[in-house]
Amino acid sequence: MTKTFWQTLPRPLLGLAPMDGVTDHPCRHIQKKYGRPGLIYTEFVAVERLAIGDWALLKDFRYDESQRPVIAQIYGHIPSLFPPMVVMLCELGFDGIDINMGCPAASVVHRGSGAGLIRTPDVAQEVVRAAKRGVEMWLNGASLRDLPKMPRRLLIEAEAQRNALPPAYQTRRPIPVSVKTRIGYEAPQVSEWIPRLLESEPAAIAIHGRTLHQRYGGNADWEEIGQAAELARGSHTLILGNGDVRSYEDALNRIATYNVDGALIGRGSNGNPFVFQPEHIRDNADRYCLLRIALEHAKLYEETISRDRPISFLSMRKHLGWYARNIPGASALRRALVQTWNAAEVAAILDDYFAHRRIFEKTLEMS
Ligand SMILES: Cc1cc2nc3c(=O)[nH]c(=O)nc-3n(C[C@H](O)[C@H](O)[C@H](O)COP(=O)(O)O)c2cc1C
Image 1 (cartoon, rainbow, N blue to C red):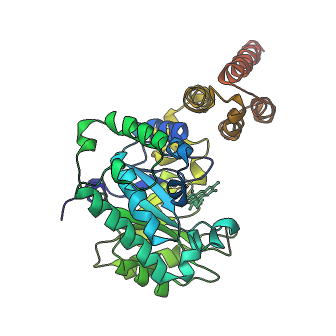
Image 2 (cartoon, rainbow, N blue to C red):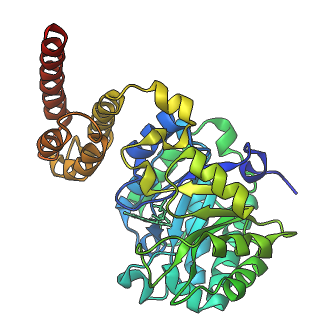
Image 3 (tube, helix red, strand yellow):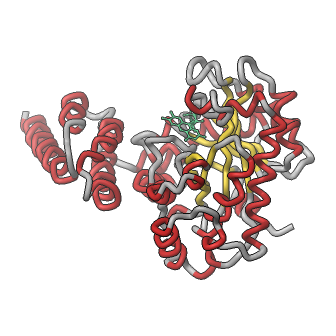
């Protein structure tokens, strides 16, 4: 069996969990640069979008080389739509493909996708097998030009993205298919759900320790995650735990306690890439360091996303709010930052903030 990053990455595995509307290309770049999580997932993308020829699809699959290994996350419930999407993702140079079986949004679940698949394990298995068939098709020579209904504009952009890849990533190699899910639908059902998923032999299963009904309420149940790890023992599938991890040490502790192969951190990384780093590195970062990172993030956001559409800077504002925490004058600073429209405005506000801090600290020194 050819080894993939799942086997070669240093243990324990620690990754940035996918978060729709949060972990876009610039966010992932910043998280990787300062936190160095071992794994990175894109936000989830509906497989139907390729089938309907949505030319804007590629925006969500942008990444840069610093983010590797980078996993494309997709979702859907119609197995036949998966192989073409997977061929495209292999052509785009992704290191792995992940299938979302955990999203609790009503619009997704009602169609039978996301966490809806927990109720239809036969379909879930078919979906994993169909994704693997896509990888096989690619290994056997399928390319972007073989994709049905691929609109010309999408084809040209995808080919340009593929041609810009380093040669190693244009080479055909087995791309692992993994799953991210929850511990159950209404109540925990790990003992029925996980064995069914394991039958389709995904490379890894990341499990968020909440049911669909809990959404994000209550606490993640790591005992259930531990049970899933027990069920997977002896298989080739790795188990990653997810839910409520607040620091590197917390992740290590849970990984050891529940005997899982790794963990994903989602909300704990918001405005806080150092969450993936051990305490001595976190402590070396000065208290204003996150503000400098905020500005770098805003500039990258503008370069890659909002230059031609200033309105889309709105989505950067929440990150700015997250970065401005646990420092003097944080709430006034946050109020100002979340009204900005571009990186220049962010820079001006931060200059002003630092100037006032300097005057304030000088006054303290003199008194
Ligand atoms: C805003 C937001 C968006 C999310 N989007 C996705 C997604 O696109 N795909 C996915 O698998 N999970 C998604 N999740 C779930 C997270 O990946 C993760 O499972 C969950 O937040 C629990 O982990 P945490 O406690 O570390 O945040 C999202 C969560 C949040 C808060």
